[in-house]
Image (spheres, rainbow, N blue to C red):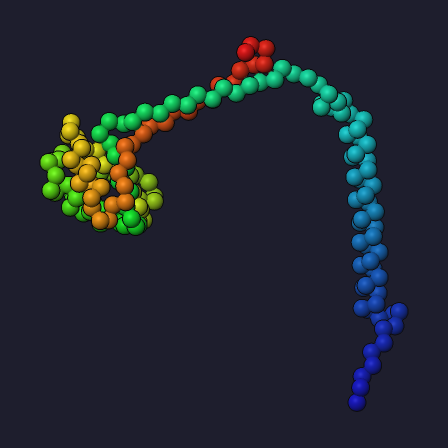
Length: 162
């Protein structure tokens, strides 16, 4: 047995659809009118010629300098290791060298709890060449590079004085 459903003009679903369509069209019509009114007020305002106003241009001067930090070296590892494992690798590499005064720079940030692939080591020996070669020869260490400090400054200069 098949059921047929007819929507009569007096049914609730039929009247709800038409009421919704009328309400939405009324809302859209009012929104369009408000947008047109706001657009006219913006055009009529005093700020319409902001793009035509000229001011003196400003230039940016960038200064850049870098230099090597004495006795500090970045030790890059071949994988990501926890801090204790990295310290053991560095200690094992420097055991056979003549360097006795060294330390790893501690990192004080939230990421220091996670494995990393580098450490900064301070070798407090005037002749740190033997320590560097010992570090580079360790199988878990990828490379050893001097630590550099970089200074960058921005300076704003008015357009008339160059």
